[in-house]
Amino acid sequence: MVDVTVEGYISAPREALYDYIADLALRPAWCDHFMKDFRLAHPRSQGKGAAARYLLDAPRNAQYVETTVAEAERPRQLVEATHGGRGGRTKGEMVWELTRAESGMTRVSVSVLLDPGTPREAFKAKLGSTRWLRRQCKVAITRLRVIFEEHPEGALARATVAGFEPLKAPRFGASPRPIRG
Image (tube, rainbow, N blue to C red; front, side, top):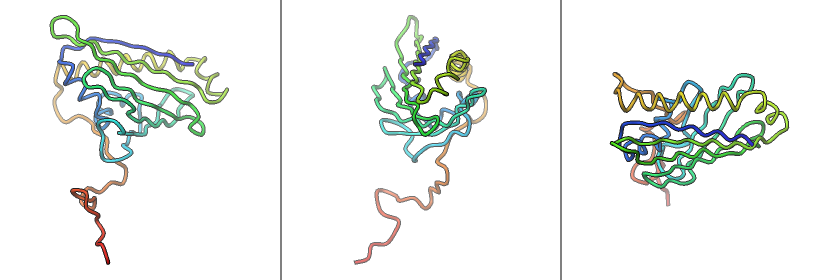
């Protein structure tokens, strides 16, 4: 069992931080240093049921991971269920907790729990992917802090749905095909 917990402090209201963290389409803006090839599973990127797929680019242990928002309790907690690895057997979860700190600060804590699905993945976790994941989560929280406190110029990276064409999508719940009958 791999258990990684990282926390940091960001000078921003926790409601704004929660909205940013809960939107999976914005994840590449601050996690693209270790989550490559990030794409959404469907156009809805916020709230319970939102899902995405990405390549977790660990050294000697790169694997595709699918994440789904399992619980969303605004503005306190976001729980993502993950699975990936060989045959999708590695199960886990990512828990984001936001608590108020003194003088307008918000404490952001991310816990990553992974249960390797094969002996090979368990062995690779012992070789150093746990330390690598902890370091990457620290960098991600630092990059999130920079986005909120220093307001970088230009547009931030945003994920889209692979192959999605919004002009051909159904609007207002209507089917794009004519109904015969």
